[in-house]
Length: 76
Image (tube, rainbow, N blue to C red; front, top):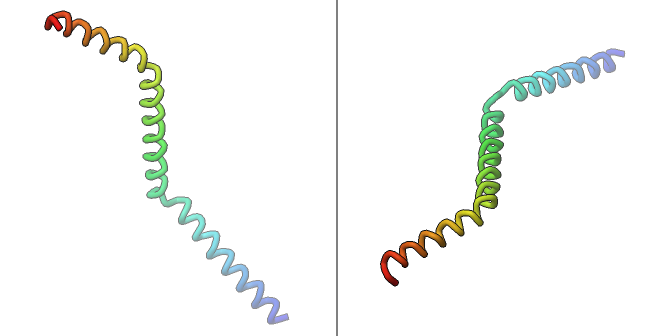
């Protein structure tokens, strides 16, 4: 019976240490800021890609018109 009590006590101590360690890690906010920065950068990159895809044809036409007008002005 003594051995069973010692085993239960050891298990309880180990479980308590594991739970406290988990609580400590979940309260630590250093890792959270890294995740937040990664998510923010991902959203910005997705926005840039979407804007570039949406604006590709209008920008292409705009620069064609600019080149055409410069050539006309230069007499080329």
